[in-house]
Length: 157
Image (cartoon, rainbow, N blue to C red; front, side, top):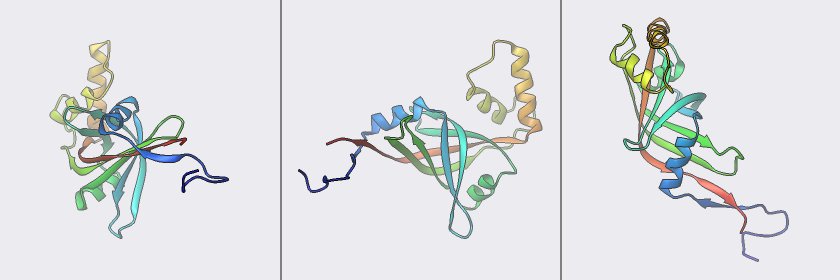
């Protein structure tokens, strides 16, 4: 028996390779975004995100009035946590966040970036409505340029 196994002990965490972590990010769309409050405590919020593995960028659409936006303006450090469906593995993507401009005109750069994050629309009229809604909601894109990717999986020895 290894020294980290014994009665009542569960599986041991094993580090995951970068390719596995990137694949895990791509297989999910919900995660927990962590930003830093001014008092140093973390602020965690559930978000829908899009992962671009080629550019190693996480994109999150949000409204301009959210706490996470204010916090990222003060401190751009951010992390996205994603868990496997069985919660036996996780991935964390850390990096510096950038904020796009607020969408102010249907079809502007911010709106088109958010449109690219969607699965797409069959009807071009739906695209127009989407872009108008991004303006009405005062939405912008949080981009996390991933500098560090890590995570583990719990596996039996």
